[in-house]
Structure formats: C-alpha cells, structure tokens
Length: 349
Image (cartoon, rainbow, N blue to C red):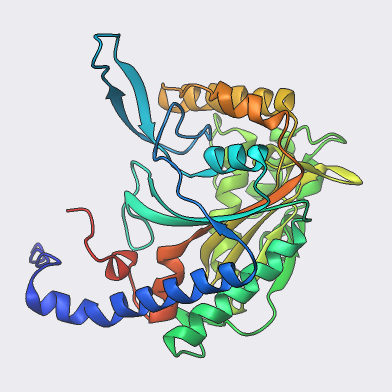
C-alpha cells in the first residue's frame, strides 16, 4: 500500500515542527558569519549565472539562455554548482581572505542529504597552506554545535563529538583500514591509474566490479560502500591526500605527486566539506578539465564549456587554499534534523 503523500512544507503544523530547526540555522549563520568577520575575512557575493557551471564529470547543472535586447544570438548560461570559479577570480583581483554563503544548484540530486538548490559556504585563504583549512573546519563544527546548544551530532545511528579534534586519515589509510585495499599500488609515480590492479583488489574485498568500470568508477564504489559509512564516528574525520586523478582542482602534494592536497570533512558518515590546496597552473587545469568533460561525455553524453576567463585568471592568481562546506548539512546535524530540507525555509517544491 503506497504511503500517504507528505503535507506541503507551508502547512502550519509542518512549519511548526520545522521552525526550531530553521531558527537554529539562522543562529548558526550569524555565528559563522561573525567568526569569519572576526578573522578579517571579507564576505563576497558572486553571480550565480556563469558561462560554465563547473567541469566535474558527475556534477549536473541547470541550463538557461541569456537573451540580448539588441537581437544578438542567445548565449548559453548555467546556474553554478559552486562559486569557486568566481571566487578564484576575486583572488586574482587581489582579495586575500574571502567567504561566500553562496546559493548553488545541482541537478539530479534530491534526498535526505541532497537538494537541487542549497547553500555552499566557501572560503579562501591566499598564501595559506591547506592544513589551515582543517583547523577552520574543526572550529566551524564547534561553533555550530555550541550555537545550537548540543554536545553531540547524531545521524542514522552514528554519533560524533563536534568538539573533539578531528581524526586526520589519508585516503590510502582509509582504503587499507576499511576495505583491505592497497590504493597506492594502483597509482604510478606521477599519479597514473592502474584500472585492472584496483579492480582485482576491489573484487577481493567483495566489491562488485563491472567490465566497463573505469578506475574512477571503482574508486568511488570503494569509497561509498566501504569507507564513507565509517568516517566521522566518535569524532570528525578529515580524509586527506586524495589521488591526483580524484582532485581536478587541487595541486599535487609536495614530495608525493601520486596524491593531491585535497581533504574532505566527515561527521556521522556525512560528507560536510571539500577542500583544496588550489591548483594555479592554467595549462594543467585545462588538461584536467578536458579529461573530466571527456569522461562526462562518455558516461552522460554531454559536456560543459570551459570558462576561458577563469583559466586566464589562474595565470595571476596567488597560491591559495579553499574549502566548500555544505552549510545545510552542517545546520541539519547541529540542529538535530534528519533531512536537509528541514533546515531550509522554503524548499524546492
């Protein structure tokens, strides 16, 4: 028997249940904004319409057209999936410490942890190593919890202490610990990937591998099935040193070109943030974007244009580190909600 449809979010009784979560979100927003301003960050607000929504193979954008009043041909535009390109242009312009509570849009995404429109809190530090962002993330967890008046985050039976120092775990260590897979054995000296080697290791770990799976497909399956559910339990986890093949906008780690300066923040098995030591080589960035779009065309039959203005800005952008945090997910955990749309004032219908 099908379940009864849920009442609309604006139904008074539904809104009354949601309102404590929404007020907690507002308080967390104020506290986080205050912390950034106290650290001498400048708040920015970038345009959502961009010539490219981002160039990651598995991100899907909303497209529209820009029509000129002078009768010029319509131009394709996209709602951005992240404010990253525009924020980096601001770094190239001379800004040093910026943050943005950015509304972003991603198609093909809806569920307890996903919504087609959501808020991405992004911040950038020019001249700072990416490890500083790890400290930022730990601080933001504590601020959110303290503001919401909670000592523990809980989600789907998992608990996390937001005040405890996060565990720092490399992706290779996580693969070995949680899947019994030697990830680095499938990487060449410069980060080249060995698809068959990873496939064999994954099969030995009991993970299904299809004949047409790429190295990236297998990597993602190990992450999703074996690693992610075990991260951020007891305390937050900073999963770091991703293979360069899985870090399209991050620079290689000094001393080990197989991996990149990328980390993700997890709490209660929930991915909260993604951070990079930013790649500033426009030639290498173009190469990676083309590879990502080739993969997108192979899987989905579509590709997005490159933002040539962004690639030009990389030529003068300073060394920097940046982080993107799913603000709705953070508010959800801190407020004790079970779905991100419970902390959104007016969810997409």
